[in-house]
Length: 169
Image 1: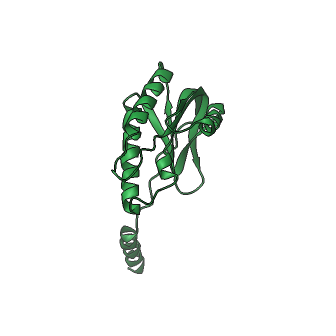
Image 2: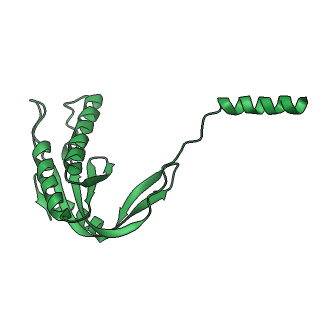
Image 3: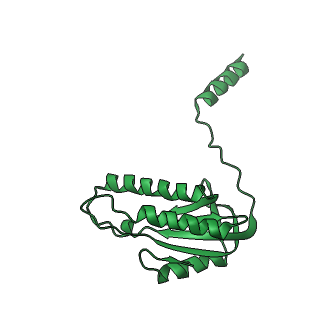
């Protein structure tokens, strides 16, 4: 009887415990030709104090949705959004043309001012093409997607050369 009581107790206890998080299976690593697009939204690098912090984050979310829509509409993938920088990739046939069209749309939608009090601060954009390794790495609890390769480094160099409203290749 004690054994059965103990089993019942353990079963009841296990029902009340939170479930372990289910991780998505990591992406299989692959190297393939890609066209990468970097977007730097300078308006968030140096907030001007016009907006409250909550409004700034809401606006950032809206801008990220705009970029994601422009990238997704042309078969691209939003890879990384870190601070005021975004990295997207395009695979397959016509990837460079689709990336260029997406960049033109991003430049148009992010170059307008949203408030009367602010100045328009267009983004910087850069495109680079080449082989890139993509896959997942786990360094905390969740796997994170990464891109590695010369094209990623080329984007960094191009972004240093760009000025607002530039699209550099």
